[in-house]
Length: 423
Image 1 (cartoon, rainbow, N blue to C red):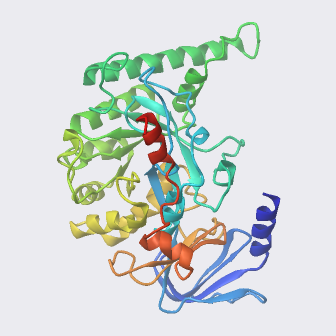
Image 2: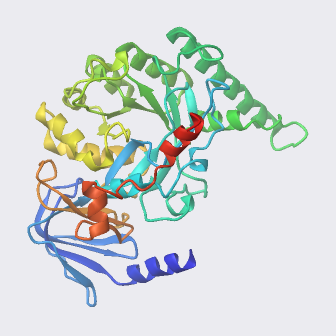
Image 3: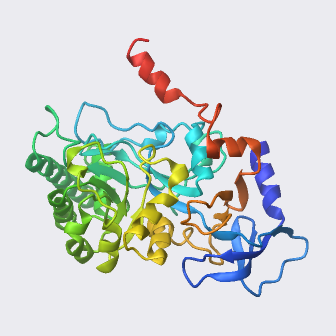
């Protein structure tokens, strides 16, 4: 561990200058034949008239495109698990307690240009646990990937869901109305718990018994955690908006298959929507109307719109396809690229660190062979915090990018399944 940290630190001591490429800044106009300089994990200079620092490692980027690393607001890499079947809501569950950092999916995400992600548990609960914001660094333990808040706590949101996924036999709800009622009941309890803590004013004899589940919901009520809400059908989307308004919590709509039918309501609520666009319909019935046009519908009403992989629903190596499919049906190229980067950063409260090529931001960027939304373009390199984590010219990295024997070395999920089935 100490050796790895020392190696990274030494690599960042030398400035890295990428010269002659086309820079897609995201915030600001694209710059042709420009220079990007990164040092000690940060972007220190970017533009057309940037001098290469003395002693910097110089990278020829002529004919290539450089843009910010992609931000995936909804991923399941790392064989992540959340709540179990003992209750429909598990606010106390922390997903970072179950992420396998040796999962080959992390290297595949790097190959797809994804540098930052929101790793979430599944949608089979009304609330399945706390999500984890990570950078896809090369790590050996989970702390190597984690992002932290200013107070030192692990950065993340909370995963909720409605619709058919969370409707089951008791103790789970059997109807949509009961689903909303159970959520409302728990948030009322959280409000009461917060009140008891406030009235105790630090007096240990007056404090209520500690409740980890209610503590997490209080963080939601106070805006410290964003709710990432799996929802598909138009009426389910509106239920989410009503609950968010009633309890004042911040929310990002995840999937939102029917977003175009309620786009004006979404925009009026001021919430972000993270889309998944799939070209092979299937799965749950409530997603039957998912359409590529959701992106342009949200863009037209001025709503914040981004994209996600839901990996493995969409392979992380194909993340660019989400934006390309949206553009194919009318979304502007600029909004689509914003959706892959800054929109996700904003939805995860990370926009001061990632999502655009700006001085002072983290040195997370990717080098492309050409136009980002072209099917003929490859991710050539992926850099996180000024350290190269993927290089397509390296045989091992190329294997993760294109597949083949050894590209999916971690089979923990399949092995778990075999053991459960008694094989």
